[in-house]
Image 1 (cartoon, chains in turn purple, blue):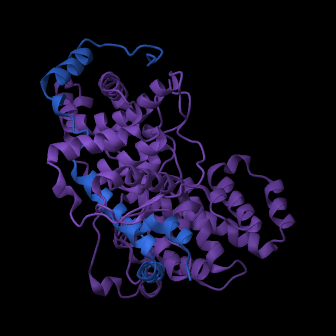
Image 2: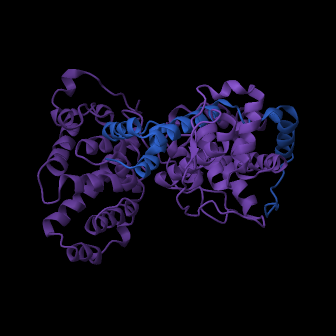
Image 3: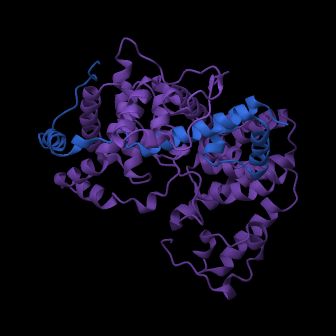
Length: 397
Length: 87
């Protein structure tokens, strides 16, 4: 869907071979402009010449500019389309995603980092851009022609981003990332920017809470009650993951909902309400945790964990216990995990957030989050061996 | 050939089914040969199944008392304490 009608008329789209050739389809952002086919053709021509055509920058460098600038513009549409194309060019989608988020963390060569610094600055702070910035690229060995192509790629990406946002075109397929904007930032009383990582894998367009959120924003306070009912469990689980006491989690839960209510006017619906709420809950929990004497930071690097108890498990270990016993056992063992692993594990395996959502909520990179979830799972496995291993099976490693 | 260490590093992605086909094939080849990693994989997979199905921390009393408490505070225009309470 777009704000303007999209056409699927094959006759109209027939001339847009360049997109079919490079993407396998005509992206919707162009289908939504078919009220003026001539303008779409002009854009296609520019894209073909500048991005797909042979130039002085490599195709991949140009694609990287497109990713980095789209990321800087918080546009998730184009990274979704282009990371797929890049995959065919041998670039891992994780890497493409990382370039859109922060190219400094994407393992790029120094030259490419300089190129993307240049691109992001031009896209975001054109007013502060100067001859010095061009000089930096020359210093990295870029030719005049390459610099020209870089500048044009930034311009093209800005054009495409603005057009897509202006037409409100939804992704052609589920994007790996959506950039929620400022409403995901923590309320101002937080000391640490844990909520800033702007990465959520979700389509905000179909938020099941949208109606209630709108009613509350329109002044109908009672409608918030439904949101409390719907998400109480999720908020509580996120909090018990951080705070290991039921009473404290309950208290924090009240604070989290209160905070969400107070900040609701700033919530613009660019991420799902539920994700936004979980972030507020985590932030609330972390603030409390920081107030403790035995404060355990959530961002320490961990050393490697080596599984020790290698014993074969029963085929259906859960048959040994009742459902209630299993629940209590899991709760008990989960609560013994250090909180940094516990939170990650709860978000992924009990809350079943996506890796991106959980990373986002905890302010971690995706690899950082994955490492923590794995560590939590392995520690939990270790603690469960005594309950579920076959009698006399295996040895300790 | 991949080592047990490589296998453990990729175990999370294997469990989440987030691997490129060729890496998955290598891990599966390793599994076929390595009893230790087989046991580790099987027991971690079962751990996950138990955890996910356990309904742990599902908050029962989110029912009335707490909902009312939250709504009362909201309706009262309650302000949050300036500093979070210490645990």
